[in-house]
Length: 313
Image (cartoon, rainbow, N blue to C red):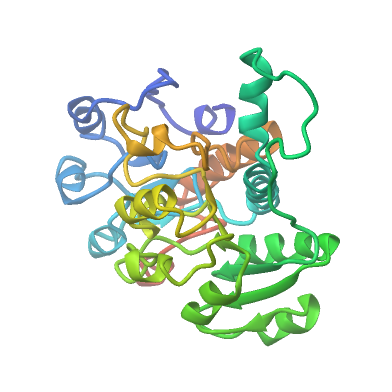
């Protein structure tokens, strides 16, 4: 806020627990030159028609599927995001989810809190081994690679699939490139790290979930719609796969009638992959720096559509 106030007149929606209602947001952008927004805000043709003076949309996230980048580019509006600063925190959290699902940590917590834990038992809450198993990473970008580096400490084999091969990371991580279907067949854990695009929407559909091992665990810290949630519920309920651990969903917040809430073999987190004090502060700072840079005629640190900057000079 100090960065923004030093250069701009700022209007703030300060109800942190809820996003601004759409009419409020559309009214607020009418004379705005910059918009600093979260993934909860949909920046589409409708919003852009209400914001004729808008010059920059600074997303406080690395993903920007909430923004119609093409529509912004047509209007010479710069879109920015916050890559790099959340890589390690998100990779840590992917591992937290993986371990929680594998060792049934949430179920154990519920058992203790409910007072139903009676004694040590040989078969109590048996989970899956992590050490020495095979980790499949779908999307070997910044976060996927950081997740893979952590796998070395667990002595895991790493498979990956990606739009293009990463030979430098294969050498560093000992990772093996395979096609998606082969990865799903061979992996004990599958961790998703792809952006949400038309090509990745429902990337893990019913047919692909069927390829996974019955002992496999799916971890998603990317975007909810990368997985067909209806098919995932079926896979968990009918034990095509052993468990899932999710930080993201097709609808957020998760609706109270979601069948995921009725399943014991899924760990559910409220989209907090990057939620550490240090990381969220740096994300906010970077978004503010991006916004101010554009409004003061400078190049923003992390533009999504840099072609706008080239054509506007």
